[in-house]
Image (cartoon, rainbow, N blue to C red; front, side):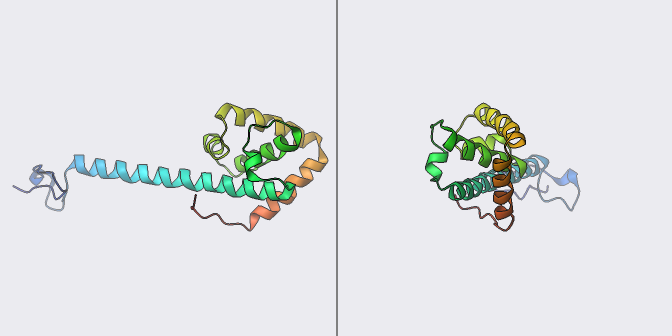
Length: 146
């Protein structure tokens, strides 16, 4: 009888063939754990990228990152916040991750994205700010340190 090589597993794997070293259950569990770790790494990388974008936008507009994430609703604060969220979404970051990084609800981020998209079409100054910030972000790589 050939036994699975996974720790604490004593399944008979002799019927799987001679090249198999683990049972199907252990292989499935290992694959599940690896995919969960990949998902977590992707999530952390995307949240870190949102934070980088947020810091570049805050620096550009001369405000602090804390203010961008605050509950304040003034246009002076909300436009940079929405612009940071919009740029993050343009980079393909999920709305849920943007919400986590900005301490907002997902639906709040979604409404802000709608609002800023319309504003960008109408306001040439904000559109120019968007272009400048995205150009600045081109050369910035993101590390996964949160």
